[in-house]
Image (cartoon, rainbow, N blue to C red; front, side):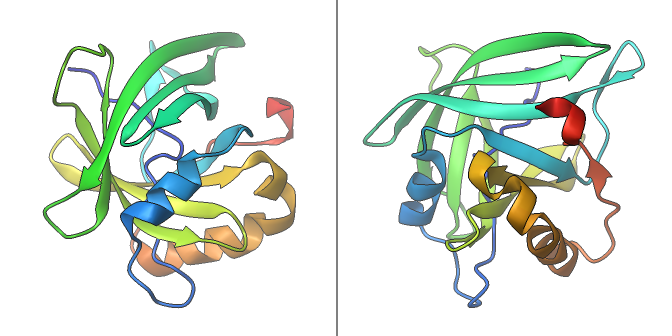
Length: 174
């Protein structure tokens, strides 16, 4: 199964206060009518040598623990949209997890663990396994992208000290 960068969703943010993120934090992160932009990630994702940029998630619905959303990204000046499904739950690390899948009927998917969520700045960090290695994605609500970008990036660097943050979002995205 291919993996997806789920903005948000994948909300794996360690709270600024040092609190461990909860399932309620994951619900709050995903339950927005705004675009949920991926600001950056610790790995590159390409199609035919062209990087995936301007990645965002847009909620269609969030009912109980079921999340229905579209993920959109740009590859070589072309916009691509995927209709995806997610199930929220607790992971093995006692952190909230979003299991993302392409087909609604599937019961398992690719797990995105929320390791950090900043309630004030509406940004967070998701952890995902990419080719057997933990990787991290930094997300922010549309309204927080400009004003909170530096603070959110700082949180990313604290969580993933050895990571390079590959920029996915830029001014050309809007």
